Image (tube, rainbow, N blue to C red; front, side, top):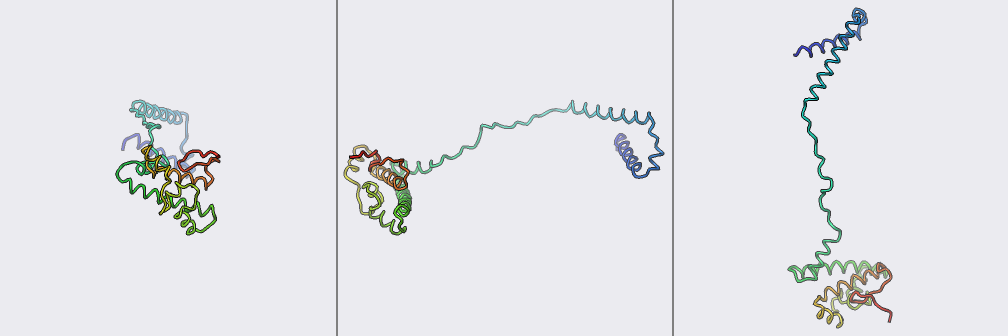
Length: 197
């Protein structure tokens, strides 16, 4: 054990004994020399610690770049990708078309059931027969026996877009009208603003 450590342990031990037994405390006469010596030792010890701290290497931690964050997903991006696959000529488009049509059918059935206050089974029958909307293109998109109106087939052939895309857009608009999400504007089967004629 180093001498300074031993001296410190002895001083602490004498302090504890003096605190417990008043006789030991009265035997120790703290004269001016003892108090000065203790003060000088305290100053020397403080200077030693300050000097050791001054010579120590300093290393700053880097907080990192706060602007670099993990990219967040954009809501609806997955649906946009599936719609693009379904309406485009990519591989797997048939399956994507079927999945989107089934999902839109579910939403349409739920909306018709709420709008007309009928059971889900009755709403399914209305959607299957095309009686759920006045929009012939939306009805053809979800109804089994129906076919698209001639004007939609001609527009699809001329524009190079698929009839599926016209039907999907018209169906989403028709469901939006039933839900009251259209903001007061009525749309026709091709998704255009319908004029009052």
